[in-house]
Image 1: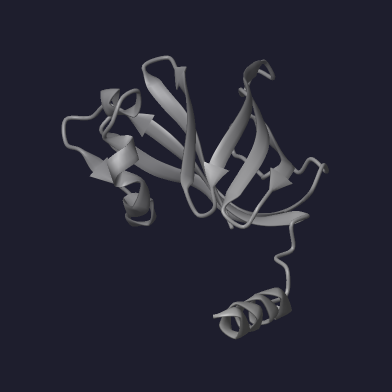
Image 2: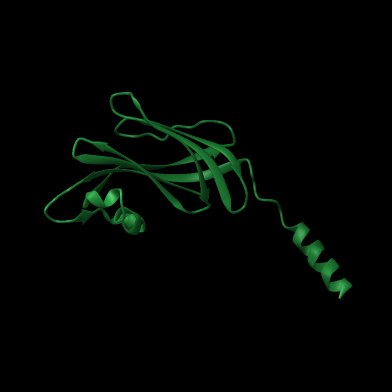
Length: 144
């Protein structure tokens, strides 16, 4: 029994450690509205289940405003390029399976609408939304 246990330990420790000081993130900026006919851009399909739940379910039409990729270095804020307003992302901590992020979003008027510390599973989509009149502005984020 001991031999196998030692062998497993050696094999396990030979695996290179995951870079725990950065995260690769993809983001989608989404406009939301209520329409007669529900509509959703094809690239938003991975988010469909989340978009059909409150608070997002008050809208039924979702279109991509912008999308992109950002590499976050630990404790260095980065800003994805948004069409409406601005956002800042900060990676505070990460493990192989979890991320600790700080997200701030400012509306088109420059006012802070969100300042949020968020824990997430690696690969999970996080959605942050705000009302803009009857419509919505949503920033979706996933990091690996």
